[in-house]
Amino acid sequence: MINSVYAECHADSRGTLISDILDNCPFEPQNLFAVNVSHGAQRGGHAHAQTTQMAVLLRGRALFTVQNLDKTEICAESLTHPGQSIIIHPKHFVTYTGSDFAVLLFLWDRPYDPIDYIYE
Image (cartoon, rainbow, N blue to C red):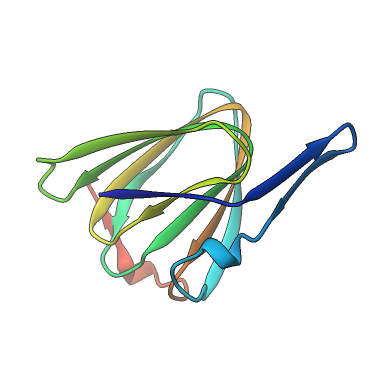
């Protein structure tokens, strides 16, 4: 249900550099956006009918909960290191909770389309 992917991460006293994100993406991105998640806040709460997503942790930590549309399969994945990523397939509800002021980069395999959203 979830595939984990890791990008190169280089950290030193000057900060963190995450490279090779696109090399690890299993599709050609058509859309991308960043989300800053306040400590303890929950985001998501929807699925996409056709969109495959790759979520890349840039800062902090995030706990993802993913479940299929009929909610018979549930999977949780913690992203705890910059560059750690997961692939989220279509027709899976996703919620994620941030800690340590998480910043996530989302890459999509198709352009934004409000019709693609499925809400509970």
